[in-house]
Image (tube, rainbow, N blue to C red; front, side, top):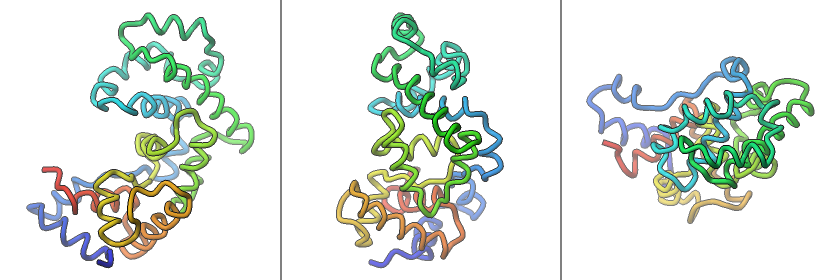
Length: 227
């Protein structure tokens, strides 16, 4: 089948009682100004939260995140970049936290990544994220996977969604809809396949005027309604 926005909209809209309920269910992304206003500590927090979510129930990580915010002093990148083995060892004895040494070590690594981007670009990390064009969001995924710690695979998109940057997600339901439409045969992992998926989302975005996050939600709901 050819994947068109009209089909996608009508298929999912039929599952809601009203237009208002339909619109309220869809996710929202922050606009570029809002992304620029966010402190870089919020981006490091979101990165770290996503790292800990990988392989765990998100609700468990989310419930513990206030304790992480307190333990890591709000995730200021300048301070977190200096975390050493002694500090990590201390956090390994903090029962409030998820005590995964390898994941805890990514906090300092990703803090240094944020500081490197700031130095290279001459502005905040938030400005860097805000300025990246969403019609090449997979390019941002690639950069995060290459230079960030444990931000490869689905984690790059997961971090961006937590941070508020518009992105699609390649959940199993989204991949199923893309496969049914003949865009891909399986979950895309190669850069060639990811560019093909990006092109499909770009076409839907141009047709509909909707952000990527809403289009991927519609794809997922077209396969598996969440209610």
